[in-house]
Length: 274
Image 1 (cartoon, one colour):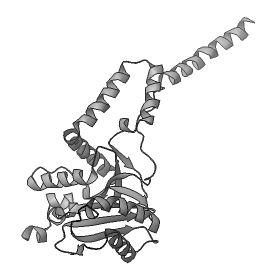
Image 2 (cartoon, helix red, strand yellow):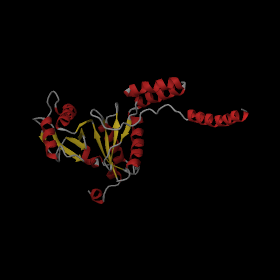
Image 3 (cartoon, helix red, strand yellow):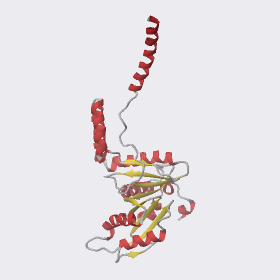
Image 4 (cartoon, one colour):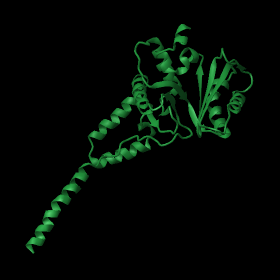
């Protein structure tokens, strides 16, 4: 009897210790886990980089965007910091409830979230309000151009801001383009604009370059003039796999190296000569 009892007692502490360690390692789930896909209605920035450097590019771009957001959108940062400070003072049970509430509040999510895509040399950083992807990228490139000596990135190349994303189909492009182009081309009273369209298609075989140009031009509407070199506004269309995005940039696009931050910091000899 004593020996049998003793053997059970010897086994118990080991199992209890394992259970105790497991319990101590439990944590409240992290807020803002990266979404798996890009969804219609999203906005963000496509970033190209060298092959095999996608992970490092994500890290430096998140740091860069966050630094600018703290200056451009200070109120958004204060709201998020306040929410995290309150959580530290609560017990575990209240913390769990706070996490659930944060998930239900879009404003509590991070301003920048990387989204995994199956395209080499390309990453996507999803943004939420109050971030304006076009204004953010333009500001970064403007300041990089003003101070080329202070190189901010090593792996990032072209930054392509997307005001709105949709399905890469005729219907999807129609919806996105109408919403993005209306404020620029459908003003009241009417204002004539010179414009150009620049489509980029990767890993996609449904839409074609010509069909995209014709469809977007029809949405721009009559009264405006096409000028591929001296445009006032450039309509940028990016199609990657099953998703498309549209944005409108101004005539600083060419001067800012087409938002290629790598070219701004390290111009090729040909560009430097110009």
